[in-house]
Length: 287
Image (cartoon, rainbow, N blue to C red):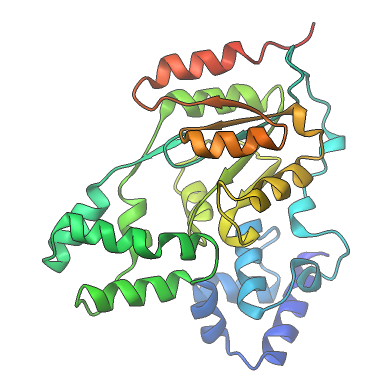
């Protein structure tokens, strides 16, 4: 579907749902200008994450919104890109985000503690109480922000702002991801809140490469180490499970992937250069 067709379909479905543009923006955590441009057909290729958020806010599937048979996550056609095979049989490499491609510093909790007057450990405990539900898509980011604001006695909170201002790219892994993308299929598998991957890409907090597929827990409806998220990632990779390498800093997540037949490697955040080089050494292409 071209941009004008998508805009017209989106406008029709929004009106059918009884939503104004402002109301849909609120539900999808989207700026008014972005939604207005999509409906006018002024954005040629809206990001996959924006379309996913809009579909979720409308309560429809991606294929329904796009008016196509394949889901949006199939936009990248793997067969169209010839890639290499590593000596260990790997064709597709999945990276975790938090703790692997970026460090999430506790500065976000500290800043929120300072703004709220609540101790940092109490802020962090409150955060983790709701985090899994938001990352599964069971609670919206808007809902999470409202709950946090209420619990901390603040008029409003935008956790995404605290998070995005606190994460720090791990350059060794960004360089590795670039190297991998030039040789193998590459993707992301992340436990993350709605819309954050898109924001991180926009702010260059993630590697500036074209990922073949991105598995966002809030879209899939499952988090690592739950089996469903790996099954979704296997299906999107389009290769045999034994041909997938998964890189994560959490051993429980790695073991769950290994049980499905994936190859796995642990990333040591304390020694990023050495860990990145170890991963690179495991991906020697077949001559």
